Length: 206
Image (cartoon, rainbow, N blue to C red; front, side, top):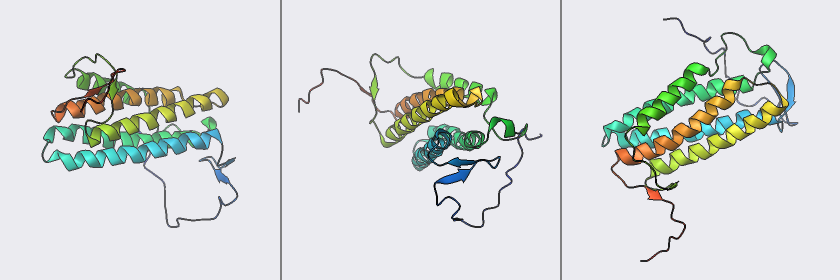
């Protein structure tokens, strides 16, 4: 089967170059930009999200031996990590420099996320209130991923109001935020634990 995207053309043999010591860096096309620019903020937040996804993925791996069903979430999260790298590369590239086989997120990835959301949601009870993070560590980490994802989405929306970016960028992050919410509920359900629902009148009665 032919790959959709080109393989990486990266050689990393030096960690520091001192080229960014004055607060500027270069995009994929060679343009020099401020490290404080909204474009840099956008793909920096996507990078942060990738790190949080990796943390949640490792927590899930640690649970798989006792809870084999969680292998499904490990598989999903590893896929997401690769796609977030593709997304970050797109954000680091001006539209005129994007090549046809450059890695990027497409409608294919968005539709897959929608299917994964629907599949996971089928086994979950209807929520009578908002759910609070905290039933287990993996649940909390997926909620952290969700909040960082929503920040990345907001950054990209602001960027799209100033510069051209592929519409799939915001669509993918929007759908991923939904998926992370559903997956946080799904892992709690799979672990046989109860969700903590928001109660505006809650008081500690212990």
